[in-house]
Amino acid sequence: MLLLTDWLVIYEKPSRVVKRDNPGVQAPESPRPPTTPPVAPLAPPVTHYENFPVASLLCPPHLRQPIAAIYAFARTADDLADEGDATPDARLADLTAYRAQLHAMAAGEPLAPRWTAVFAPLQAVQRTHALPVPLLDDLLDAFLQDVAFSRDQATYADRAQLLDYCRRSANPVGRLLLHLYGVHDGPALAQSDAICSALQLINFWQDLSVDLPRCRHYLTDADCAAHGVDRTTLAALRRTPQTDALVMDCADWARTLMLQGAPLVRRLPGRVGWELRLVVQGGLRILDKVQALNGGSLQTRPTLGPLDGVRMLARAVRM
Image 1 (cartoon, rainbow, N blue to C red):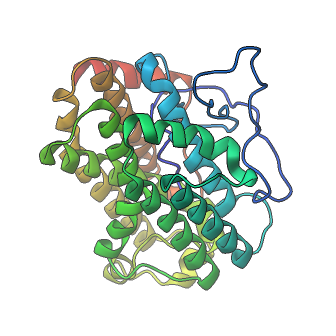
Image 2 (cartoon, helix red, strand yellow):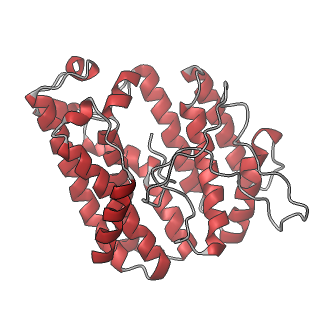
């Protein structure tokens, strides 16, 4: 699942990846304790390759730690759901325990040692910024669904059901960021939801060649039927004129959704507006590459490079 806490769409080189035999054992490694204790616990460092670096220079300094704490929370949940070779049932058990720890944290109960590096900084941010815990819970609910669907080789019936998944897997990230920036009005939230859902869909169509062999089915039953594509063809990653048309139709849907949300960039002033411009342009640039393959992302995963960052910045300036 795309981790939509990977917000800022600018290119960076792959950072060091921490490999763990059992991702459920502990959270990402904590930074070395400073000589002088900080006022609040610091979030763990980012230790994964990301297309969307976290808490960049565009982010106001006073929000970098809150954003990093939210990132660490979602990144750890993503590891529990996706990294290593744990069984689906073990992943579900870990995610359920992680969810219980979230609610214990919100209730002010003592933190269990297993994920203290994640929940201590998040608890500090929750207290200072009144983070909406239901949004954090929605993210975990989506991770749980993703694991269960993959285990059962389940599919999404139609676009409405897939968007309901995006409502929990992606939209909370945008709403949490707007909360930190003090933006709460309905139109802004709706446009944020459109952007985040579009980013999630774009990642689905970017990652078809990776997800389908892992029994992750995001092309809906209704879309497959409309284009005359059967699941056997998709599972074999076999391109046909019908699969090409299916992928391109879904890419058009994602672009339409992104453009519906894009006017939000002009409503948000200063750094947050520029940050969001890069988010939108990064998603659109990946979508450009998906569509340039004319359905070929079924077999080839498109990626961003350094020159794409230059193009995205130029497009962001013109928004």
